[in-house]
Length: 99
Image (cartoon, rainbow, N blue to C red; front, side):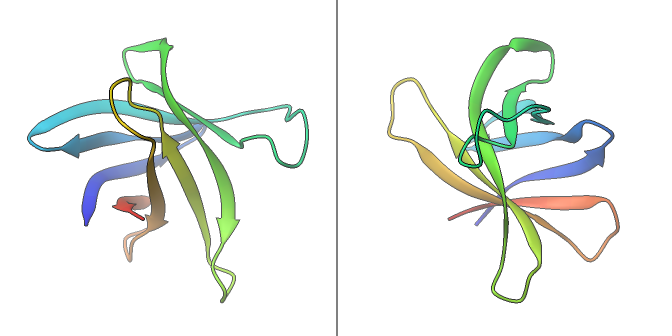
């Protein structure tokens, strides 16, 4: 299921996440200095207020070495939601899919 569309930016990705008729514009921002190899590569924040954080993400690769971002949303009133941000056939465009 596709629940968002994103574009690549110089800081990561910008797009919109939508579930059950609700949507939120977000940015997936690269984290510069990671504390360790297991630390996240990305922060998911509100596009209009970077202080509001929705989750984190890690850069991964498929079995055939195609890169993607594995994202974990941390909703306040629900269990974590695991998603994949994958490239489309259009350069610079990405789809957010439920794992």
